[in-house]
Length: 160
Image 1 (tube, rainbow, N blue to C red):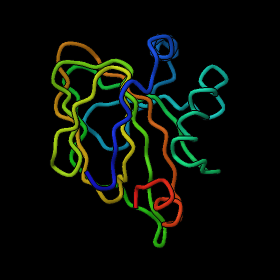
Image 2 (cartoon, helix red, strand yellow):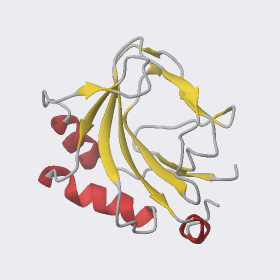
Image 3 (tube, helix red, strand yellow):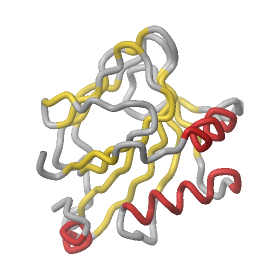
């Protein structure tokens, strides 16, 4: 798919366990898109610094970025949407599946993107409509690291 690519096994089992421990914190806040999901800000978090740096490397080393865990409780969704970018800029994003769930199918540009635990996807959320269907069985946990960059940066990492 143009403007996206999957990175199988991007998170190791040990990294997934470490992120699941971080997820036990209580400072979750509601996600901005509705649908019942929650966010845990990882900016400045020492426990996740190495993983965030690795995600930034995959995103071509942007200097300004955001990093969070997204938790999707049973029944939650992410409505189909496209992220807004500042004129003249591009959005780039890495989502890594820490803990999968029943349901919770991830769609990019209308196509399902099958992800196993530990897989990641790099994509342009400003170009590709993305959504998550209703989560079933257990909560879904996703590492999300993204940035707003110039178009040349997106071309350099083959997400133009």
